[in-house]
Length: 318
Image 1: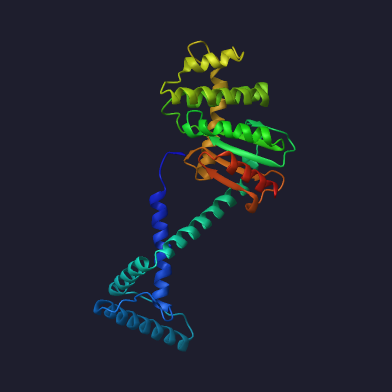
Image 2 (image 1 turned 90 degrees about the horizontal axis):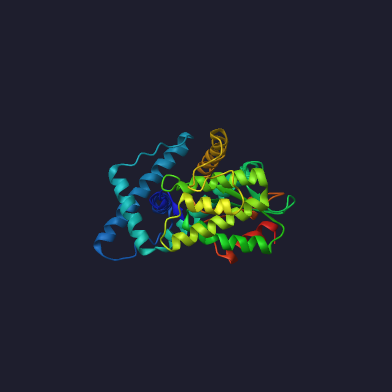
């Protein structure tokens, strides 16, 4: 998946916070904890400090019960240092808990992301300004956020074509997410042309143009060649659309028309930002008639056919 920025650092920080809280709870409230199993004098000293700290907390809790109000707990710097050292030692001796904490954190995040998608279904499944291909009464929607100049989007295009061919009850929605518009003009130009063809000539013509541009741009990138506006013009004119570009790749569409098309691209960028997508491609597979968290799949990056088919079957309820 091609990203504008990495979130790995943020993920690690969150994992550390989750584990830190878990370990602190184990230190303070644990019964017969196995945190420190060594018999050396340093560990014995730490054990004594743990017992002393736990006793202090118990005393505070008992006092709070006596006056029937919650206790205000203030940790000293020594207390914080002890908890930090104990947490570090615990993770060294029990690394499986770090893995488990990471899994739980990712599961929580995935649940939140899926809820965001389901709650945004009306925008994701909008058909007037979003190029789409497939039957109106389809049971499953496949939504792709993509950029024509994204290598992984080009790589996943034949996979998506195969999935569309083998699943007649799927409707595919193509969300232009032009993250490479600052690097190459083809990113924005291809998106605008696709939108124009879809709105004027319909889904079949759009799907033909989309697949051809993905294929040509992907082949050029594989051969380490630039895909230029004149290359795009040859493709568009070759398909019979003489009113869009001249032979050099300059737009023939009116400024007003281009501005309207750009408004759609801007709306897609805002939608992607709302869903916290920063790279392409992102695939969403969901039930069209009754979208639910449990039948919705979000796949960043280029899936293979097996993964995509699994997500489609899941969305059907199979």
